[in-house]
Image (cartoon, rainbow, N blue to C red; front, side, top):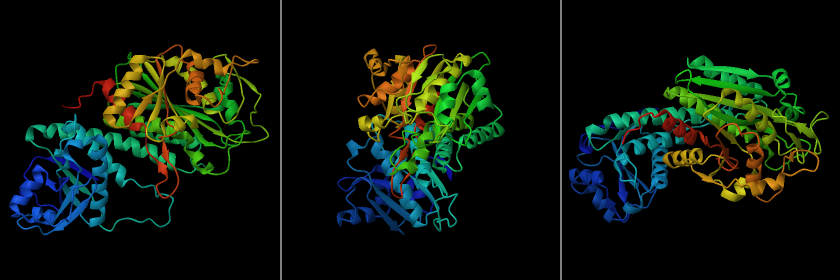
Length: 502
């Protein structure tokens, strides 16, 4: 898909399609008014006849509009002008791209990037349009023997900006949007891969691919032998029931000064989670291939980072593992000694992600990080609390939490902060070990984060629970969402000081 920006008048565009907005009730946007004037009232006459009301997402495709050089004009309903916000803008762009892809228009000039979105500038509108377009056009069909493709797919889109002065801003927005989309696609591809292909070794292969493609990236794979030497007994216990060896992939991106403390991203990489001895119900268990959504997101963010060539040091850790029932599997009642030396009583083998992450979080102390963010499909309780809309954010460091929340608002990849008070730690008390791996049903998302916090005392830390946002369930739309690559990349853009334009 090819993207570009230009600043031009609609009547001079010679394209397969021009895209302009119409507001409710039947109010032409400024660009649509220009087209209407050139076409001698052709468009306004259609609206008066009731062909389009202007409700958000309505589409009307016109052919051979009088005095217009382009073959088609697509009128896009944008709702009430004063109510056009970020969410509606993204939805409008997505619906537009899907429509264009079905019309046979292989290229289009889009004037929706000139719409007024409350509190948002040209950079944001163009970048969001690029990301929404790439999201719409994504498909995972590499394992299908018959691939269905549009006969004449959309291949090129030009976003118009109001003035020539904004062209550099638009170009920067396209570059950033493409960089983020690259990482999102990587995340989706790996997460959607079935567990008989995507195992911990496969995650390690993907890390090595990044190393081969980008000069600033190097990788180290921590295998079970090295884990044993390091005392990562908790991590190893979870993978004991699987024939697939546990592997932790450490991706090092060196974009900043050699002495700059790195940001560390740690992703839970349970390539399949059966629940182990505490086995899950059969219904929907196929979706437990997405329990490596955190590792997929970290891999995607590292890909975006390398693609954008940001001047910052970042280490991505993919904590690859598989949780299976077996004669050798760990059991409820076991007491594990973690890499930190702390002991954990296992109450449920389906609360395994935290047992893998705790050792990974201890391992990254060696990097003397500026900050550590772990990303995990950790608790079903997060879906109960926040649904599928927001990622759960918990942190022991207020400034880091605020940075992530800010990045989530900028990117539209939303997060919501939950408390991490000492009161909740009482739910993890054990009569036999330092603490348990399960705090009960109440506040399950928070007690899971409390567990992880016990291993993060030596650095600034935040935890993202993406159980509700990493994938969509059921039906033909089932699949990875690519979240929170967008939020993480925005956080790294902000941290690196990369200019975004006003």
